[in-house]
Image 1 (cartoon, rainbow, N blue to C red):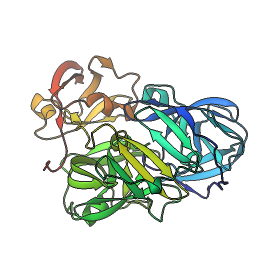
Image 2 (image 1 turned 30 degrees about the vertical axis):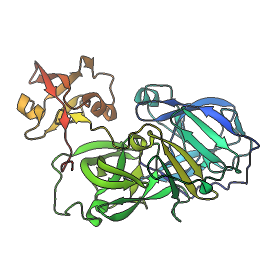
Image 3 (image 1 turned 180 degrees about the vertical axis):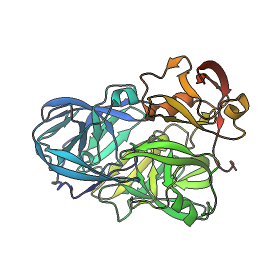
Image 4 (image 1 turned 90 degrees about the horizontal axis):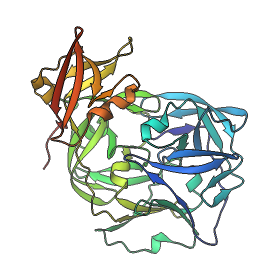
Length: 392
């Protein structure tokens, strides 16, 4: 999930303090945090998305009240309008918010449960966390809402395992923090809703001297954001500092657009953040990171070298075969119809899910059942890293 900015729908937060810490367990999937809550008396599960500045986005299939207005949402691709419902109460674990100053955005969300592999009804944004010193503890898989007496600005980082970051004076609806790439500062949102490691857009790489505006990426894929699909490509990034954390080699996801409506330089996503316990203090505007996993770089993803699209006839069709890729060498061709991946029929698979099915560990193989001019053909194709550039 690329960060969503709410236009004209800001919450007025009151001063809230706790006498002791309150915990709320969450489920961690491969790409997301899923947390259970009670909204206006109705139980629901939400993907925690700190890149979304509002309170809640909930499937319109769950009735939590009468429509109260509309909101405009904006992301990397465009703007969309959604219905709002007054948020009257919210319970997150043992935390009870009885007078939240915000709204629930209701809209069709598709099958989030299928996407995340566990029950999910919507998205929980940044607003429920802002009035507390909030900890996302990936190690113990729980949210912890601390009293304001916990002052992380007084903590001393060692800048190897622990890091203290000052929020940038921008982004009321996001946590903007400084990173560094190619010797230049970039300002990115802390975004648990972004399934990737780091997502930026092409203009940022051009600005810091890592991408020639005339250069065309060798490998281009399709990713999905709130308002629809967008072309993306992977780039090897060397010797970066992501939120102050030195990272020798990593692969960033780049939005292939000439410009972006998002005001920051991108987002640091789940792939990076899952290695840290994170404490956020919005009042004092500090963030504390503790690296418990010992990992900071992302693990490269392998792909066979095909771009698959969804045809008007309801079939998955090979739109492009990357020259020299394993798929090209195996003989897969454009306009081939993909029927199954690793024995799984694609009859019930949605367009945004197909890429996850063909991805895997570099060096592993994927089995593809393909129809070409009515004839069934089977291929077993190696997955390789299709990132532009090279590691250091």
